[in-house]
Length: 279
Length: 176
Image 1 (tube, rainbow over the protein chains, first blue to last red):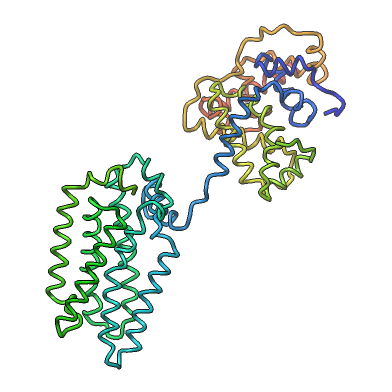
Image 2 (image 1 turned 90 degrees about the vertical axis):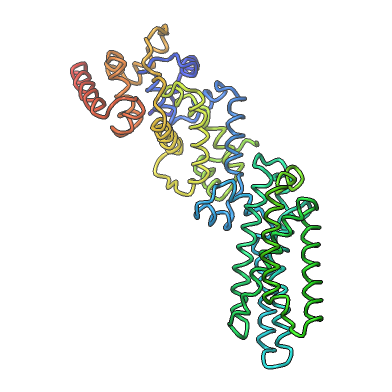
């Protein structure tokens, strides 16, 4: 195409108005691909407001946050995209939290390992079990509430019911925490039934925290449940000759009772989360 | 958005490196004609806008794949028309623009333009029925495959083939 030839501005205007016949339009389109000058004459004939509007949409798409690893895995596993986003925004589902928890429990287990030949073996196992039972409670507490939850505002405004979202996130935190604790327990000196003793107390404490959260702020609820647990476990071990009495048959039954009672409380009072618990 | 005087190839290289301003400059340069050219092939303005947006998002993500195989506008048009076709595949076309009656008054300049650009071919194309012309436009001028042209025009692939053959025959007779 001759570089010095340019389309008549009237033809361009007629093309922009979609009034040019097919034959000349096709001819012009072929020319436009090669001619910067004619393209620039044509450009102002498209409303600037329309172009700006489309540009905003394009910016929104290319500025959209990259999907994180946790979120990708969850979506791959079949979790709905919006649920995955909220789960990934749960602070206690962050890598740093996992690492902290793994480190705390791992060191407790390794200490127990090192002390296994000494008289302090029982004490270190006790510390591990108490910590293991508390880990998911701390996780649930950290998952909700202003100051710790980056998705707090989103959660408040979320169209999803507070209780449903709370349960989804609590279940995710609990299962992640249980897996880490189970792995850490493998580092304990004696791999017998005692390394599983933390499981029921851990679930019981988590349920109790959720039940208390129908009255209290989640962090307060977790503190009440966790401190009561520490207090009872300490008292029991002092009173009894057996250090691990809190994890004995009585302790396990109390844990089951706590799970059942808390579940009943939650079932009756779950509407109390609405608008207050940001989940 | 600042106006950049860089060439399209330079801008596209900058886009590949993640330069948002370069994408904005490319958009300013190429979105207008793309809007108009797509509007001639799709009667739904909303869909045209979505396709233009898709196209520039694809340019943003795929700028690294541009291998200077042709002019940048042709490359952008190739993305745009295929985005339009994939949109149309999801949704039947409402109407195909381009088959309107030729009622515009032809100025002397226009006559010259046709004469310079096409000569006999221009008038031969003009004598084709709108259906045949649409097929020629899609397959020859837009460079689409039979399947893509079928989706764009909302007709079966077999019809595209028979119409293309008929158009070729009529053109050959007109130019003989």
